[in-house]
Length: 123
Image 1 (tube, rainbow, N blue to C red):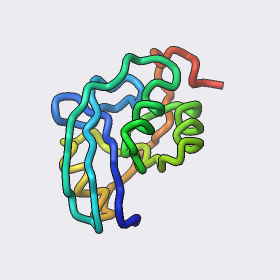
Image 2: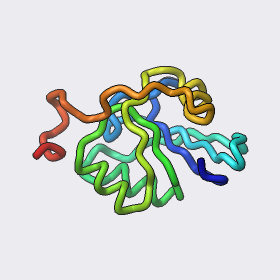
Image 3: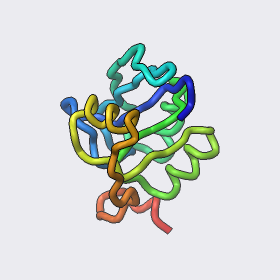
């Protein structure tokens, strides 16, 4: 675990939103030495190819804890130096963060399979 992190969780109504790129909001947590120092909810950018990864990079994120996302988003986040923790459960974001920090989170399938992803993430 890194000493200082800025963790992003795609959010809607206080819960983890299951599709990374289409989340209405993002909850950001500033974590120092394993302790949450600050949290903030921001409106997410319009859903378009690459918008969310660029938004998170501009916010200084080190990590994203999310549900499903496409391969293109994973590659872009990787190129931006943001660690991806995909397949997180749809639970209240504070609970997801606590499980992440406690290393008790159970990740499911983090890939994007369903229709409606716009197709541009799939190969």
